[in-house]
Length: 502
Image: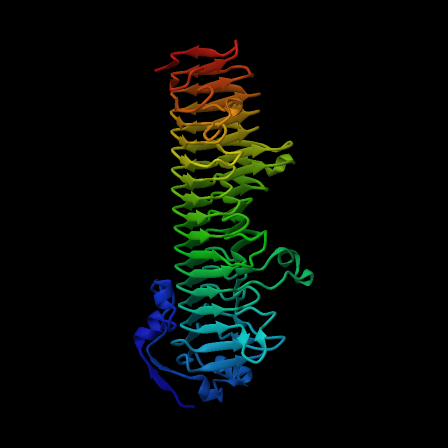
C-alpha cells in the first residue's frame, strides 16, 4: 500500500471544505488530534472517486485498515450505495479538502462512527445522484452509542432527505463545528420509523449528553435541530448557528427543538422563517436561552407541555412572531411549569402578545418573573397585548416597557399573588379610531386576587391607567398617568394610595 504525506496542521485542525469555510465564517475547533505522519487514500484500496463507479466496498476496506484517511479535494467524488463503517477501536481521522461522498440508490449510507471518538473534517456529503436525482432516504452520518467524543468539523451536507447527522444517546461529548447543511431532513414522515419519526424529520437529531452544535449554518430546513431526550438529554450546547427555514417547510416546523432537555444552553443563534416555534422547549429543566435573534413563527420561545422548571430566557430579540415568549401548562397537574425567568428581551411587532403566561385545567404555572423586557407592538392587528398572564400564580412583572399595544398593555386574568411594579406602558389601545372601541387600559386586572400594582407609569391613548374590576386583596399605589382622562378605575375593595395624573 502506498501512502502520501499529510501535514500536522491538517491533521490537527482538519482541512476546510472548499467554499464552506467562507460561507460559515467559523474556524474549526477540534477536540481530537492525530499524530503527524502519513495518510492513506481511498485510491490505495481501489476506490475510483469518479462519481460513477460504486466505491462502497473500497471505502470500507480503507476504513477498516487506515487510521488516517485523506479523501482529497472536490475533484474526488465517491459514489456510495450502502453503509460505510469507521469502527476501529482507536480514533480515526477522515479528512479532505472538499472531497464528495455521494449517496446513491434506494439504500445508501450512512457513514457510521463506532467503537471510538472519530474525527471527520473537510468532507462533503451529497444526497443527489445526477442519474437518479434527489434520494428519498438515508442519513449522512450516524454517531453510534460507543463513539463518544467524536468531532464533525468543516463539513458540508447537501440534499440529505433524512437527518444529515444522528447522534445516538451514548455518543456523549460529540462536537459538530463549522458545518453547512443545505436542504436536509425533508423526507416525508414514515410511520414505520418509530414514534419520533412519525411527526417530523429534523436536519440534525441529537440525543447525546454534552453534545455541542457550534458555528454552523442550517439552511432551507424543514425542522432545524432537535435535541431529543431518551428519556432526557443534559448539558448540551447550541451556539452561534444560522438556522433558516425552507420554502417547503411544514406547518409544524421549528428551528431549535428541545425535548426534555436538562441544563441545555441555546445561545447567540439566528433563527428565521419557521412556521411553528423558533425555539421550542418541551418539558425542559434549567435551560438557558440567551442572546438569540428570531424572525417570524408562532413563538420566539415556547416553554411547556410537560413539567418545566427553572428555565431562563434573557437578552434575546424576537421579531414579528405571534408571541415573543409563551409559557403554558395544561391539564393534568403533572405538566406544570415553574420558576421561569423572562428578562431583558426585546419583542418587536408580535401579532398576538409580547409575552404570554397561561395555565389550563388542573396544571399550574407559578413563580414566573417577567422583568426588564421591551415590547414594541406598533401594529393595528387585533389581539395585541404587551404582557398577558392567565391563571398563573406567584408572578412578578417588573421594569418592563410596553409600547403601543392594540389592546391592554399588561393584562391579568384569573391570576393569584402577583406584583406589577415599575413598568412603563405607552399608548395602550393604540390604533382604534372609533371612540366606542377605545376600551383598553395600561394595566388591566380581572378575576384575580392578591395583586399589587405599584410605581407604574402609563401615558397616551389608554382608557384607564389601571383598571381593577374584580378580586380581593388588591393594592394599587404609586401609579402615574398622563393624557389619560379617566385615570384609575378601582372597585371598592382595592387599597389605593398615591395615584395621580399630571
